[in-house]
Image (tube, rainbow, N blue to C red; front, side, top):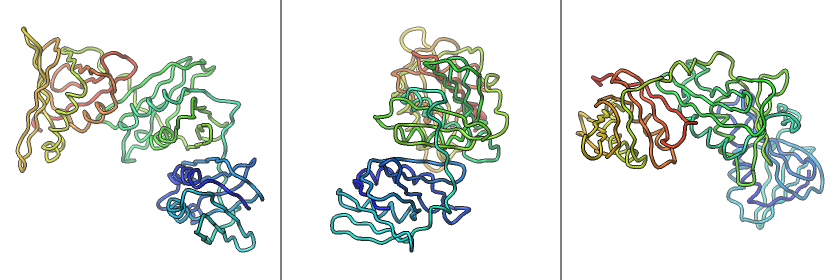
Length: 376
């Protein structure tokens, strides 16, 4: 292999595929990134056997070849090279990769490419096409609500359903639920329901660049996997088996109080409250009070035995009964941080009933938060 690439392009590609390199690999070769030539481009790929990422960059290929290079070594080295042309030349006899850039020369011990697991590439002829920006926003609206612990594996994933011209994503960790829908440009022929690891979707959303106008999602036959195809990147992820909870049953169908408030004002009040709530299992009291004359109000209050307490008042439009309810302030912060609309609506039915948070001017995003004990 003998190839030349720009340092900037190589560094960007390595930063993308490196996220699939496992921290505790089951096979030593998984510490490496696969580097090979393909169709006058340089291909880089990495996998942890559950998530695989492949990236292609433009290159001048003088001689085809392939090897696997220690990922961390190559990433750290390339990130510290000058922004010039990088020349890579592999000696296939001893698997030594010679790297030259400006006044820098390095030799890196590699492992034969034949020892690296096969990473499948997407079938660009089949799949569902989704606008890239819509996909990225959908993931940002739900991924934070997925469980971080794998006590119940299905809750670490994002339930994804394709039906007619509607795409649905839902995530829940037992304490909250995030649900987002979007219309597809082309209806799907067969309804499909899968559970995709939240981490995989987060990585795909992170990879999306300005040149990616659409993303192709496909399900290879006979493999419990999902594939995502972008302009210069493919991502493959193993699906999670199991039954996702009936999220429709979790969403309240009625409420007694509707509160509309400016998103940024409530977000800042919650951030101030978190300073004290951290010492009390993140518990914060939300007191909503309507007013016969003038605006209603929302008070966000928290208390710490060691630090003290905090109360923050925010003007609001309140329709319904006065209510006091306790929420995990972290959950409120998470959902308010991803709502970009000016105003947010909170629907409540009592201190022991779930609360619903949603943008005021759209109905495609719903977030449900279970209340904490009033005694918290």
